[in-house]
View 1 (tube, rainbow, N blue to C red):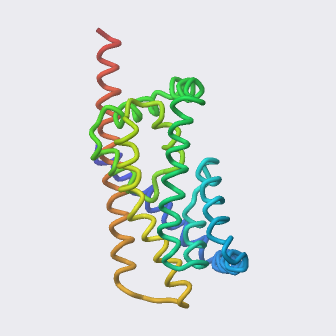
View 2: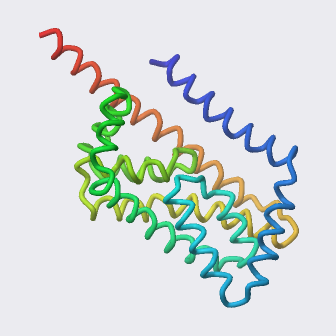
Length: 226
């Protein structure tokens, strides 16, 4: 158990290291700033275009963290309500699509992957607090969850509440990164504190979910042998 937890922690650390490496080795900052100039150049249409791009990226299961940072570079703190509204709308659309339009496709995919099936069941029959904890993590694939969770027994109300609460800290972190980038850099301790809280939420979500999955798999194995 402890060894597995350590491996999960190392995977999270590797993801963080890869992100930092990409930031320093690739012209990421230049790309962000170029997007910001382009979006501001659209005038009043800029926020609407940004919102549309965010909805499309969410539905296409494209990671939206870079887009959120770029939006903050373009619009400052106004990117926060725009992003939250766009993400909530897109997440709800994906959830509905996963529950109705792609229901059978999602079920077939889940049926072929025992670990994924156990994960969805662990979350689907758990309370809203576990779901919210998963949604809090900025490193768990948020957009892919939208479709998959549609195949669970989670109610729409619980899904929306958990989604809105869960996305808030990660979105604030990304917008904050964009805002300090727009201000030509800052080294405020709040930045590091929020990143640390995001990492803590990630580790907690991974460990709690993994343990519930293991319990499901063990129960199935015992039932199969009986």
